[in-house]
Amino acid sequence: MKKARLIGIAPQLVVNDVVKTAAYYGDVLGFNLIGYFLDPPVYAMVERDGFQLHFAKADDTNFPI
Image 1: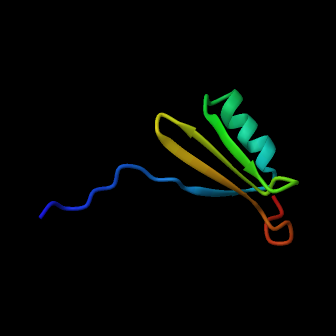
Image 2 (image 1 turned 90 degrees about the horizontal axis):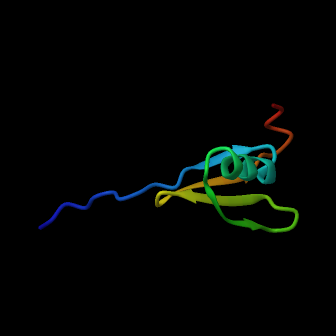
């Protein structure tokens, strides 16, 4: 029986502004936008080289930075 193996991960990062964060990852780091979710966006996904990053809007009361 073959062992299961991991072929990718999609970490979720909690951020203050998903639009600005996704734009930075696209414009500066070369990621492609997969999409924004809800209006106003509270979740976004980007990908590069087969790997994804997910950004979730922080609860302002618990994430003051």
